[in-house]
Image (cartoon, rainbow, N blue to C red; front, side, top):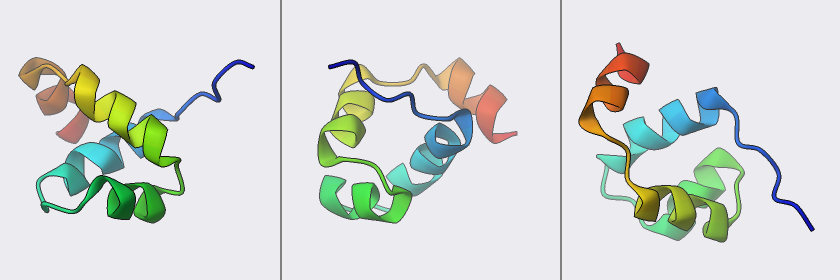
Length: 56
């Protein structure tokens, strides 16, 4: 079964919340995503250049 796509706005929110030191479970709950999806994006890492483009 294919994974559901995560919107750019959810990724921006994840980037913003990542600095708040919330657990993966709390991040998932706050964003309405599964724990697996949040874990996947956090493990993949986001290059600093991309973070700056998305946040600004």
